[in-house]
Length: 193
Image 1 (cartoon, helix red, strand yellow):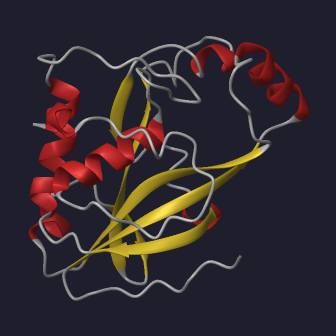
Image 2 (cartoon, helix red, strand yellow):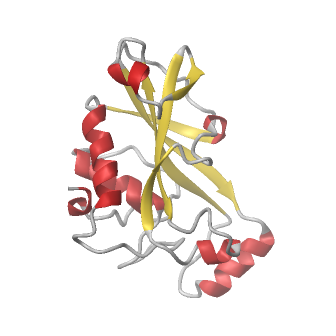
């Protein structure tokens, strides 16, 4: 599948991007042992947002989270991860421990070239979107959410976070046709308020 051409609006343009990951045989075997009740795919997808801003927007001039240059536009990424992603622990431990958190400009999400599929979203209120991200990371009223690679009934992952964020913003339907672990188990919307 080829990456679709990105078209940019006059102010903000938000795309949902799908990253493809292929597990090494060793990592796949380790995950399969640690998740005996879940079928671990050898290839899967992770969802994140890319927000492009034009020179006419206040974020372009005043928000340091917008960086880079794609088609003359600055951009930022929004994604979910584990609180242990940057910790000095074994890679497999990071996939089954820590808590879910939202992250702006996560290193893995900034690699725009690895996205296989783009979906343009009708998000125009960027301030509201970023407030939902901030609220999720700041509020402890509902307790932390346990992060696991495969998600689950009471566990979540980065794709669960992304689906929950979009639901909280008010977007409920998507043209998702790729295997995205955790997508069908979104973080409940009240975690973002």
